[in-house]
Image (cartoon, one colour):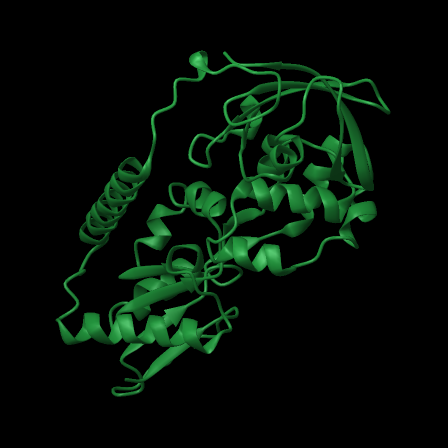
Length: 297
């Protein structure tokens, strides 16, 4: 199978019979324009600093790559950004900036895709992450509808330029072609994607329920921090008060004060009691907090 990959802005496309079996496109700066300066401007605005102050600190490190592979949670990714950038903003503010990266469709891409799709099936493969997928899927549904399938690194657990990632995509396309590639329109593809997502989510929930123990937090008690506890902390440097409830990974919601049992903050708190001081890694260095209340409600 011969596959032509489109990973940069394209010149006029000229295809001859037999040149390729399919066309594989990237999304960023090929189909959808992106502007990272908008991300930095948003974050800097929330942090009260200049974009240049944080631009040099941003790095695509292992946490960044694993976030694109779907192996790192959004909460962990944003916590790593706080450490790298040296700014203290909320997960919600990080998400706002993170999703501001999209800058519209690339100029001229729609007629090119329409013309190319008359000759060959089109596919896309993007290194991306769950928040971006959730954000761009609806506003860019029309242009994405030109593709028989969009392969997402966070869904398949693999990212470019790893050879294993391309092998996975090429194999999937070859299998689709061998079976006649039934996804002849965007509606069919969208329905199959929704079905696949729902089935996968059902299996995930069934697995979690099969392994879960039901815990009534209102019946828990004690003076030390453990799963289910709501902990009130005071920053020893700023006297700022924070309140967190320690929950499971599925229930975690940082913007509502619910943190995962596996998060760095929760790990530092477990086993401690009122009056204890804990040290938590934070942007610019470790911060110390005093535990002023432990309750179960």
